Image 1 (cartoon, rainbow, N blue to C red):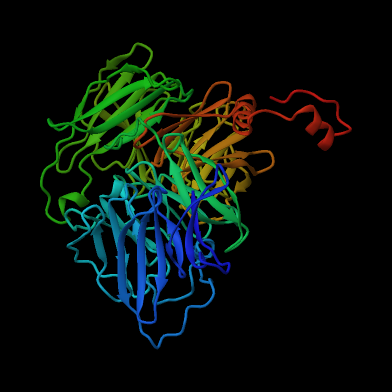
Image 2 (cartoon, rainbow, N blue to C red; image 1 turned 180 degrees about the horizontal axis):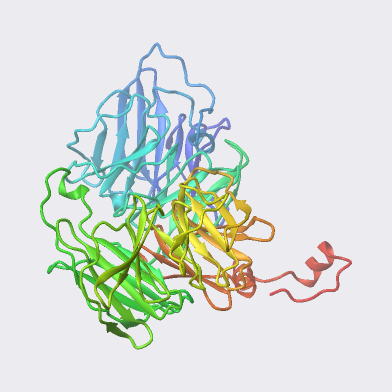
Length: 610
């Protein structure tokens, strides 16, 4: 069904007509709506806008029965000019044109909840009105409406339990039952809130993006999808089918298509409310080590799962990480437990460590081949920033300001130091002979000495990764650029830069087994593949599950990319061409017929494509 005012002359002029789109026939005519009309999110109700010389008239009809459910009359200045045209600005313009909404910045605006139970009425400069439609009763509210309701800035979310409002490019949300404000959804240039079939999510648009949030994790969107120059509008998400559909076009008012986005990978049933503190793949990607939140006993629990299937492999011994009160910042500003973990270059051993506030650092070793703990004596230094496991079994501890310590867990003491190297993280070349710090300093491991280079990755490095054969080093920067070096850091080979350089850090890197492709996870929760021969991106970015990415790993044949996230421990992205072809055939409902083939490809012999 749809509804628009009939602009023709006659008895139905300026009234709302409801039509059956499937049968292409009119069903019924409702009441007057010379100022326009709009459907409710469910399609079961219609809101009509009309006016007299002294009043704005807002009517809510039931589309099935034609019954008037509610009617509001709000004072209108009799000296105000008659509304003209249907033009406005921003994301609401095309929608108001379709609804035949007249240009009147003083006009009220209404919105209805998905279940049709609640109605919010925005009257410029007056308190926002919230109504129970069933009981026709006004509910108490303390929020004040904007002076401009014309841009349709209000929308019910969370199954009608909350009301969202676009304000200053971000989204404010209030719980209707308590009147308390929920955490702000901050994102630049938010223009329009869409509708969702799941009350745990909120979808919106900016000037060139479609954005999807989980309401229980509002710090960052689950999905931020750029529309490549098109202006998105009226997004609708059906999480049952994993599809998000915005209208899109070349400019405001030019929506000419409904885009369909597959968001099933970003909306996961295995989402964990409590994020993982750490997650790391073994060098060959066969194992994934994770660390969860502290339990009631103050222990950090560690787990190792199969890196391809996610099936449990072992639970290495837990480590204590109790925290003590500190003088200074509030407790929530102090990390309750610092966790570090790393596999050896050959993947045979795992080292993991905890450091609580005011208590000593603890460290443990685990044998990945025998699935058993290894002995570790003593307590390592507290002042380290991260750790790595060297090929000789010693734990390498960067001290941050300038230096490396080599801790022998069998003897429980520091056996060597290298002064000078700066940085809080390190990467070891697979042959175990070279180490690079996040500050770009290079250390010869057999000789335990710094080896200065004329050029190095520099101090802005966020992530480091060697290729499996040690021929290349990739360095991801805070600005989002990735620089490619030869494995000895003698030559800078090139860089990989997103079009929106500076928008998000390059936080995690992984080389494909053949060394020709690099996967990069960015701070804005997308993963981009790069072709290293051409230095160009491979396709569009893959959305993750909407959480920060701890680590990446390719399958041995390079056909899949495994993503370890904060809230979804393991996500698999199929990269095989055959999988892409199968997905495309499913979406279009089959390949070209012989007739279509000969129409579009007359000089090419026919072959079945799906």
